Length: 91
Image 1 (cartoon, one colour):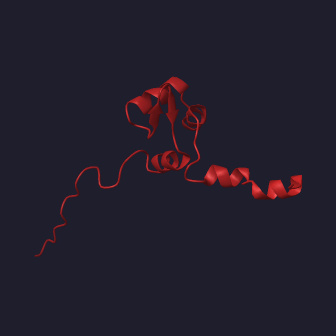
Image 2 (cartoon, helix red, strand yellow):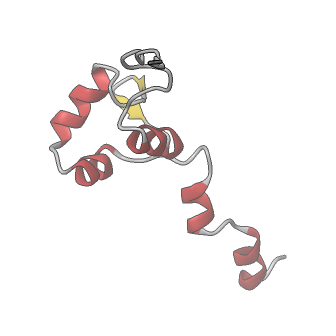
Image 3 (spheres, one colour):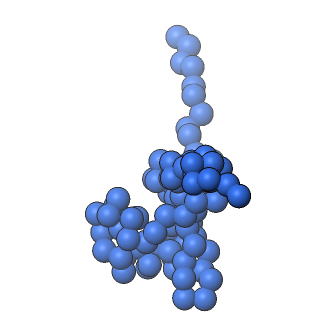
């Protein structure tokens, strides 16, 4: 039988779980981070603005996907207006 100290060493720490790719972030936490209401977050999830997967009545949002979305302001790489070609003027 394992002692309580040994079992504590085997279980992952809270920080490790929060930083794992499969950890989830709640709608309430997103609402607080964006300083908006929960209903606005649900609306953004339904529109596909915030990355998430709907399972029945629940939304599953991985922390890593949300943080990536937050750091890029939701803009995917390679999108936006095309750059004008640079032109060298010779006299």
